[in-house]
Amino acid sequence: MLYENFENLPEEKKKRIIGACMEEFARNGYDKASTNNMVKKAGISKGAIFHYFGNKKNLYLYILDYIISYMTKRLYNIIGTPSTDVFERIMNTGLAKIRLAYEEPLMYEVLYMAFISTPEELKEEIQRRYNKIYAENVPAFIENIDMSRFRKDINPAKALETIILLIDALTNKYINIYRNKSANEVLMEIDKMVEEYREYFEILKKGLYSY
Image 1 (cartoon, rainbow, N blue to C red):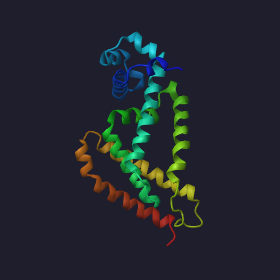
Image 2: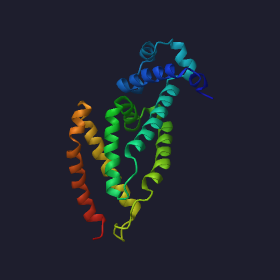
Image 3: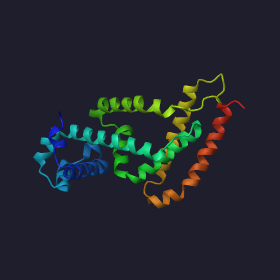
Image 4: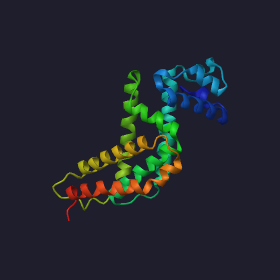
């Protein structure tokens, strides 16, 4: 197994190394990230990092997979039991993403940059991960959604995709606006965000729902 030597380390040491590497990738991106900074912060030798991961590319992909796994589980925990109303479910997911971005800013930064500014040499590997996330989570996301209110002449899958694209755009907008603010400041703005979500929803409902 590629990462067997690393996985066999004591848990505390693993977390320290993951934290140091994550911080460096979040601060400087993949291309400019320094393994010297990582090993110094983690308190290990440079040889050790390559013994565990082989090269910088494998290290980055390990950190990315770790973040994807953690963030996915945490997102579902925050959302809890999802609403059957499509707009409520998607809004709650968007708000949960915002909350998670402020709970785990370093993880969010690595994940965001991986998919938005994909390093050239990692495009194929990251695209595979994107496809896997989509394939594993979209079916669960749309499960038990009430589709009965959509107009009969509208493709429900396309309608859902339209709503999701809007919410993703709004979520990223809020995260960028509040990027340098404290978690408390962001939480104080939640009602304002919900109001804007609902304004957009009313516009979409007029085009997508039958009354």
